[in-house]
Length: 199
Image (cartoon, rainbow, N blue to C red; front, top):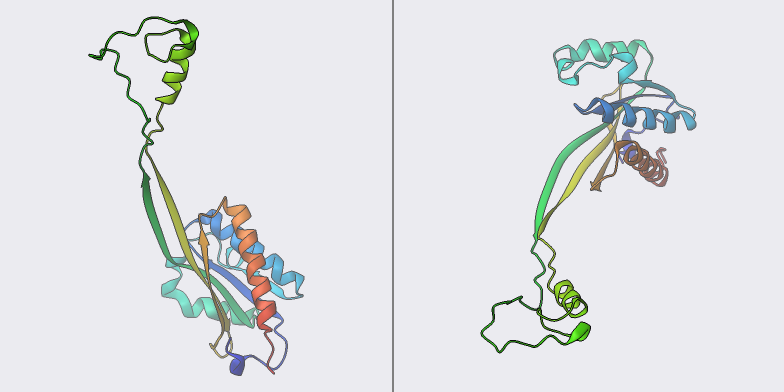
């Protein structure tokens, strides 16, 4: 929090932009952030409404024109969210081996059939069932853990000062709709705790 640069008057308007190439993620993030800001009484402008569903990298060459457009809207601040890093780790879980080994052609003396209580593979079904179940094994498998590092920033559009920066980490997020709402709830709580007011 850059409290020295916080405007003395309450912030009344904000432009919201999510820096992502994934259109679904962009829609959910911008909508959820805008809804949270509107609940606080702010006038909100979303990038999807101001510049449309274009790829954001195409905006870079006309940055000054873009900023001028926001100034013409009398927008005071810009709130950005960006994915700054992603890490995936894959772990292999080896198979669980059965305690015994099935050796139907053992050189040991042949065990006579002794009904359902037989423990040998050559006994009745009751004995063989227990033997077979005991020799089942679980195959090995891979699991991938994904960590996403996000950064939210609030800029003063008039002075171009950075007012606030919040770093977050999401691990194995669920579907984007739920993850976006959870992320924004956390942001709102954090901003409330930081108390964006000049003291």
